Image (cartoon, rainbow, N blue to C red; front, side, top):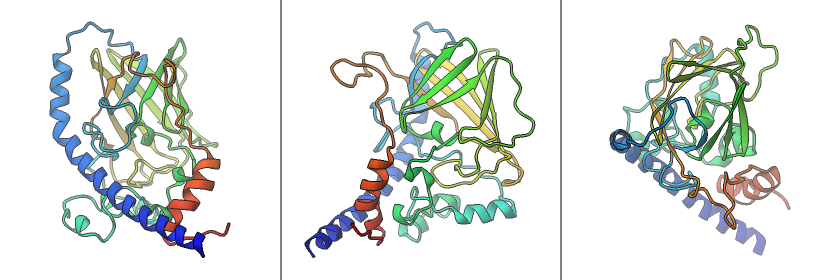
Length: 310
């Protein structure tokens, strides 16, 4: 009986936390939109010399803190872009089947007060009732991982660029050895197949063959195995990296979807410290033993009315 009482307390606390997280995310998104202009101004004022083709280093959409959680003011929200193309019938079916836990809460006064926003941003459910595979430690894939506010390290090698993402501590390979993208993909990948090249001072990355179980962003927008993602990176100042993206997916969307511009700040080496002067990314690994067996069962699921036997 005492254990059940404790679980109920935890569940109520988790509901409050869920509400606070949703509110914080929305406030953070609004603040991020307001401050994007200021970020551009700061980038223009940085006169330190730099090589526009050198992308090496640790970059973060959250320049004010090493961790990306909370209300990162310049990050905006965790969406791909506001101008969502019309969905195909197949896309609509898949969209309806996805239940995200990010955005304005489904059926809330907050959601009703923003009819101008796409419905995908106004349908968040408690995590226990969601269908987000990454909450069970599955890979986010791209473009979603590029929108998350935690840092990403670019490791530049002669024939490839490796992106190491702090959140989930996973890496992605972008080949720069001149190879062509596969024309037919019979084995989709969580991170797809990515090839990059330079166009003047813009690093262009094309990705195909992504596993269709991943989402485009935190709002649960779908994609199919036919999605073509293009990223265009441009280092516009010493410490500012600008990313433009688009996706084309004729199975899901009636037209190209252009992302909102994403901006990253270069983190100084002496700022990226973990323990005893050790530098580098934190091991923000999503371990099933911790995430699934502990947090999900003890906090997330009870918050949604789902209880597990010991």
